[in-house]
Length: 255
Image (cartoon, rainbow, N blue to C red; front, side, top):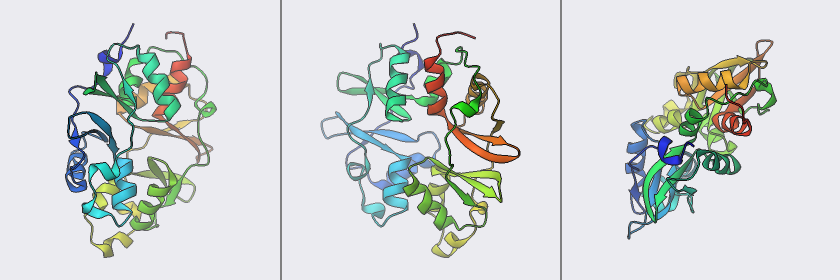
């Protein structure tokens, strides 16, 4: 049986409740983290601060660098024990539509289990049904000519982790939290530049008939959070890593 400890990332990199938003954004800028456990003054887990929290509460609002981790974090954190089955942790993540949980030994965070970690542990599962059966639609989008400022605002309040950038009906890129955090350094005037200037071109598109397990293998290999579903050369839907883990978790058959 695969356990949480077999797939988690350890040790856990943490911040304190009084860590500034500026220091948190520096950690996120490294690209190594998208969420960090937050500890209280006694070293106990108080919550989790993610790029979602920072984009919504700092980049797209007026709180700015005065905000602290305690102002930004989501609490309580979703947790797991190192010895529990990976499938149990997967179900907890899917139920919460979350992208990571904190692995604790007592009150001490010892690691983080991300949805990508879980995905890597489920790639032996067969899921031959077409990807269109689990895609979400409509998709939150912006046009290539829309401003960076508009993209940041849409991303902050759409409740998603990334926007698909369209050129007409054709998907040409994505605008995620990483691009939004990088854009905070731009002078206000440049925030009116088109989003295509800062978007990521790293997208994966699949036909709606592609089997889920094939999509899972490609997403894990390329380390992407979302794949686009295209039919008749037009964007038909989007599938997140949470959707893929959900489908693989429901399958009891090995490839």
